[in-house]
Length: 94
Image (tube, rainbow, N blue to C red; front, side):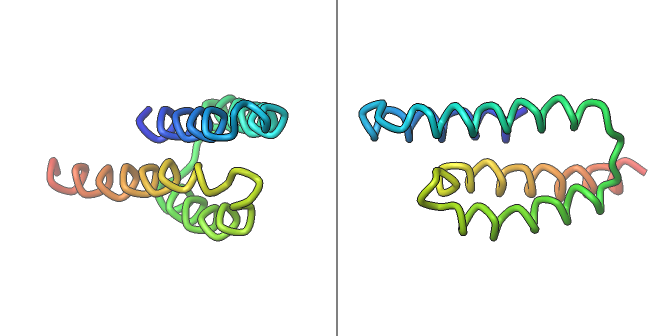
């Protein structure tokens, strides 16, 4: 849940810093995140798939930095961290 909250906070910061001038851009990002959230709940993925997805998303967000991607990078890094520690916790429990 932390990566999703970080993404919303990052977009909120973008909205406030811009003086609410980029609200259409933030709305598109929120819509995309909402669709991804719904899709992620319906599709079962492996740990490897989630790691690869987070690593592939990172350069895409850098490329989209001026379109608001810069504010989503902390959420992507948090997602990667959660997935990596999730596997470590599973190995320690076994």
